[in-house]
Length: 97
Image (cartoon, rainbow, N blue to C red; front, side, top):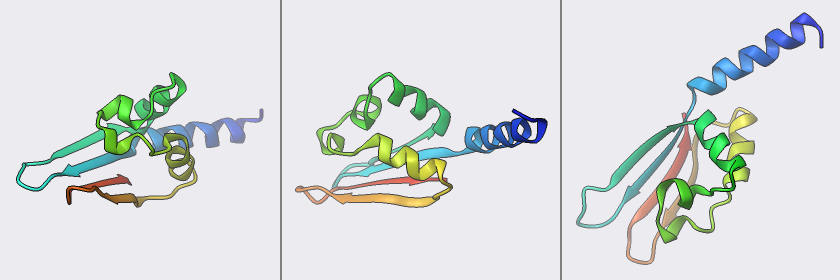
């Protein structure tokens, strides 16, 4: 690997380490929950086999594919990635910032 490739890899890591995965959960009649996790932490959790439900908890997130969200984030996608309205009228949104 040449020096410029190493610098590019380093620059990507610095940018990715500053990025956050944000999860916002709002249920009717409650204060809700806002979670902000460093993207690097989420990547490590994914390697250990934990999905988003393993990080945050909650059955509504069982079907969310963490690997797919991480691929989008690694490819530079930012903003809201997912918005779920639950059966009881609550909302769950996942974004990368």
